[in-house]
Length: 138
Image (cartoon, rainbow, N blue to C red; front, side):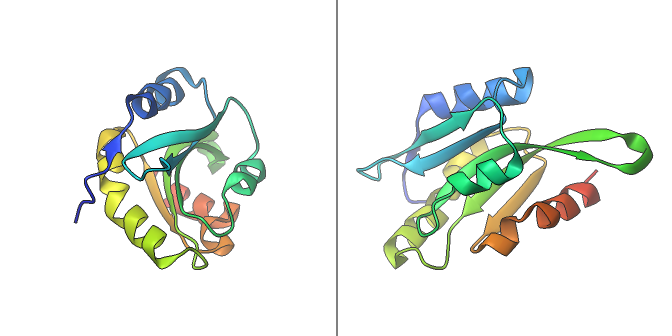
């Protein structure tokens, strides 16, 4: 099901900068105030994982991309571009439905995502949870 929400061109431009040039560490996307398009709420050139999580609102949905870096034994440092659908249980029902139905519009345009995370509470986006998933997809 698609909501007919458009993806702002800037979303793709900044994503490409993250993916190809490592210019950004993460990008947080949201629906515009009129719910007609997905726009960038915040992007950061650096930042620890916890700092990124602190930017996700506790009771409002968001989409995000994080350049997840981790150690994998003898292979050393690895990077996985991780896509997040953050829809907290405490979100309003209408918001939950709109974000759930609009996700594919954004997700299809972001080529090069290695890991997808669906989060409804902090435990589902915790570093260890994402590390486990990223390690298994290597």
